[in-house]
View 1 (tube, rainbow, N blue to C red):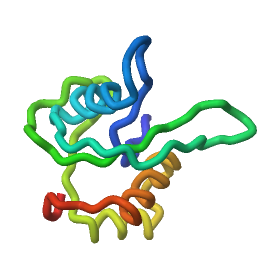
View 2: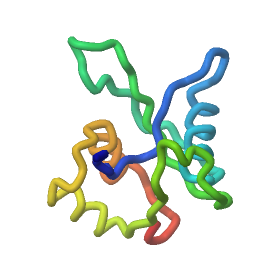
View 3: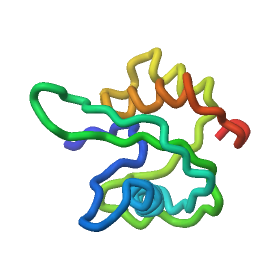
View 4: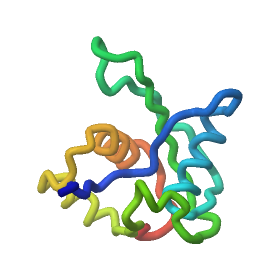
Length: 117
């Protein structure tokens, strides 16, 4: 049986697509949300020395919310207060290293303005 994992929206950049447009598209596909005030936070290589994969991390505010389009990949969308996200990380309730690093980076360097979401 499959294992459900806490993750953040992520995916590849399509040919001819900017990393900003890819971030917006992935958020829409995996959460049904459109975003505004997209801010680039960092680029990272999650497996340096083994892969040339690069992850681009963004912060953004939700502009509108709709239905998840990628139901084959995403079970559900859950909003959590920042304190709950920190507890999830502290209690090792996700093994997704890309999400862990992105969340920790955002918690350290991104100014959240959207309340508890």
